[in-house]
Every structure is written in structure tokens, then in C-alpha cells.
Image 1 (cartoon, rainbow, N blue to C red):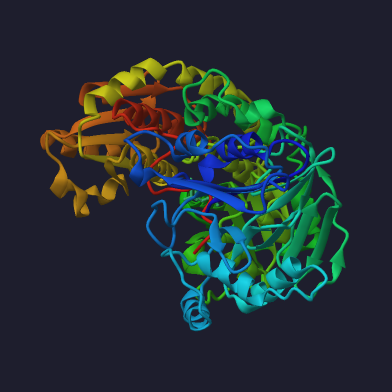
Image 2 (cartoon, rainbow, N blue to C red):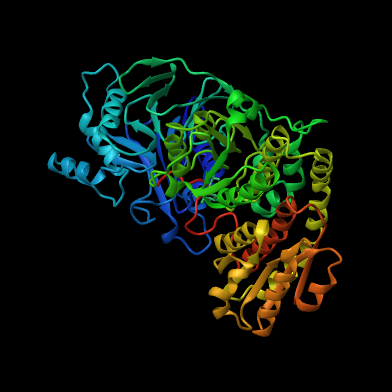
Length: 617
Ligand code: G6P
């Protein structure tokens, strides 16, 4: 995924675009570029680009881009921050891409699947491609389709081009001598911001929030023009649309660091609030109130199975959801990777509710899995980003209410998702008559924000543990039952941001493989809370690690003396019910990953090669 921002108005576009790119940087940061058109002084479009591979280590393309721009007073511009899919992340491949035939500049987020065929066609028509990207064909095809006889030749050329391409796009187009921007979307989000005598195009509301609270979300296959005469939205056949204006309700402070060193750190520390926000107003005296579930109405009692579908951290939350639905509501549940589900031709029971989980609500695989599932089954979304595509395409759903998550490695969205899954499982369990101690569940959930705070207070102890192993090359994370997905999530966090190889495993499976790797250089994190039948077995696994001189870091309940004797490091967390334990146990693992990355000199908010939302396959 990449970030796109565009401006048309009376102000100087440059600082607005650079500031906007900073807010979009989490969407991609290997290169960046702008196109500016100054109607007053010249008839040409100025293009400036920069990429990480040309810069000294640690300098961000955005800082370099801002430095390269010459002062001007252009009032129209588009800008892009890139996460490379096709073509190396170098300056040539940075957007905007240009077709000199009509002075067209394009920024694009998505993938043009038939770009090879289009490239050949365009070359046969005399176009010369100068980059290794799929996106460049867009600029040339628009140039090729340009017909000056049309009423608005740029809009017509874009519409014609989009009818010829296969793939996904959020894109913005400028042309020399043209007084506006043409934007279009299919699969990759794009919104219009409606300011006072100025209009914006953006991948998300972050950059626009500084200037206006009023936005329009473009739908798939819509083409919009913004210019001095306002905005105008059509489809590819030029039918005109009246779109709904929405108000951004969140505050700009939510996307600022507010004294923290990194967004990931801020988001880890926000989690007492995140969990509270996820259950606030939803815990009634006699049961849970989830309007989203009520929307499914008569369908609900007929649901006899659940399929959870997601990617990345959302997939780990889904794994926890399986335990919750099966154990609290007595409903069999399965979890699939969205990328696998969409091509697996899954045989779904008509009584199976398909729940998709997504922080961003944009992940391409999850969206496509949802579309497949919708053909035959009822679907439900648990999503963070308000108004995102996945929320709009689901039959029903609930929001996590975690607020914008900027850190690429997901933290607070995970705890928000697990809280929502717990609420759903509770409500379904009550409706099915399998839960008779709701007040106990409610009280325990309400006590969690305070318990998370207690864990966050151990931050400096966890940092010390991180220091001990920051030079190690591998880590192993083990847990059993509902703590197994927590181990997976701990390993994922560490590998995402610190570049240490880490694996998560069910503790008992260690002897079927990972044990071969254990020696004095292997830190092993055990998630070993709770005192059920599995506890003793996990202690045996610790003995096995100790016997091979592995280093043991154990997340245990406060007062657990038995593990203290075995482990090299103890992280004591407050006790809670077995089903809520993941919400506590994941916090020290997030902190461990965060500190390890910082100690290793990595910026946890910009892990190499990763993107916050993957809007491509
Ligand atoms: C990317 C992000 C992960 C995220 C995953 C799923 O890989 O880097 O942090 O968990 O996508 O994203 P979603 O927005 O669908 O939860």
C-alpha cells in the first residue's frame, strides 16, 4: 500500500502536501514524490522524487523530498509515499509517473495486473517507459486515450483507461494546463476532503483532518474531479453521483506522538483505554449489548458454526476468538488466513457465520475473502477503521473503537479485537443459555484496564530483559491453549520490528522440532499463566529448555514461585480468568519487542519491507 495526497485551492500546495505525506508515511516509506502545477508562473508540471536507497542511512525520503523542493507557490499538487510492489524502491520507480505526450502525472496505490500487455501495446504506439513499475502504464495509457475533443478530456481519458486495466487502484492524476485533479478508486481507499475554497484527495482522513472535518469516501469504480468549481463524481460510464458527506469525529491529537518516542509505544500505553473503549456502553446489567449482532436479527439463533478470517495480527486475534466461541458460547469455530480462504473454494455450512477481522478494514485478501463468503453466507466484521471498505461490505459488524493506529506493528487493535470477540462470545453464550455467570465475566472484564496499567508499570524491567538478548539472532515463544496465539503474536511483533528471527509454537510441539535449536543462545519466552492442567505440562517444557541451557523468560501470574526457580527472568502479571488472560499476557511481549527494536537501533514505526495495511495481494 502507498499513501496519496492531493490539493487544489488558493494556498501554497507544497507545505500541505509534505505535511500530508508525513501523516501518510505509515502506509509506505521507501520513496516519495510530488507533482506541482503553478498556473501563474509556467505551463509545466514540476516533479520531484527521492528514494531511501540514495540517502544516507536513517534519512527518510520525506525529509529529503522537503529539502529538494524549490520554493514555489503552486496551488495544485499531488504527492505519494511508496511501499514498493513492482519495481525496486529507487528514485526512478518513485511516483509520480509521467507521460510527456500531454504532460500527465499519476500517483497510484494498488497493482495493475495486466501491465505487461499494456506496456507492450503502449510501446507499439511509441511510448517509452522509463521505470520498472506497473503504475507507469497508467500515465501512458491516459496519455494515449486523451482526446482533446471530449468535454473534459482528462476525465474521459481516465474513465477509458480504467475500463482497460485489470487490477486495483487509488490514484490521482494531474495534467499540465489543467486546473484540477482527477482521482479514482477500485480497491485502494481514497477520500475527498471538502475545505473552505479548497479540496483534497487523500488515502485516509489523517492529512485532511488538519484542514477540514468534511469528507466523501469514494466507492469502487468512481472517478472524481476536484477543481476551482468544486467536486464532481462519476462512474466509468460517466453517470454522475451525489455522495454522502461524512464528518471526521476523531481529534488530530490521536495521530500525534503526544510526548511518546514512537507511535507503537504510545499505542501500547493506550491499551487500558483501548480495552475500556471496546467494552464501554456494551456491558448491560443482564448481558452484552452489541448493536452489530442485533442487526443480524433472526439469523443469529440459526448460527451453528463460526469461520474467522483475517491476516497478520488480526489472524492471531481470530485464533483467540476460536477458543472464546467454543468455550464460552459452545459454538464450533475455525480460523482461516484470508489469503488462503479466498482461493480455497471453502465448503461453508449455510449456518456458518463468517467473521472477518481487520484493523484497517482495507486488507485486500480479507476484503476479497469477505466478498467470496458473502455469496453464500452471512458475514460480520470486527474492524477498527471507521467507514472503511470492509465495514461497508459486511452484512453487519462492530467497531473496536481503538482510534487511529499508526504504528505498523499492530498492538492496541489486537487488544481491541480480542475484547470485541470476548463480548460477542459472551452475548452468544448468554443467548444460547450456556453462560449463567455473566456478572462474573463482566466484573473481570471491567477490572482489566487497571491490570493492564500494572503491567505497563513494569516497562523498565521488561526493557532490562530486552537488553540482555538484543544481540541474539533467534527467539522462541511458547504457550498452550489460549496462550498459544499469544505466543504467535509475541513472535510476530519481535520479527516485524527488530529483525530478529522469532517463532511461536504450542509449547508441547517444541519437542517436535524447535528443541533442536535450543542452546545457550536461544531465549525462550513462555506464556505460562493460569493454573489449569496445562500448567504442569508447560513447567516440564521449561525443564526441557533449561536442560539444554536455553534462557527462559516467563510471563506468569503474580506469586508464581515455582516458575521463579526455573526461569532466568520472570514477568509477573495480575491474575484474571483464563479467557481474558491473552489481553494481559500480550502486553509484556509487545514491550519486549518494542524495546528490543529500539535497542537495536531500529525505528519500530517503520519496520523494513512492511506496510500498515496491505491493499494488494
Ligand atoms: C499488515 C500489517 C499488520 C496487520 C496485517 C493485517 O501485515 O503490517 O500489522 O496485522 O496487515 O491488517 P488488518 O488491517 O487487516 O488487520
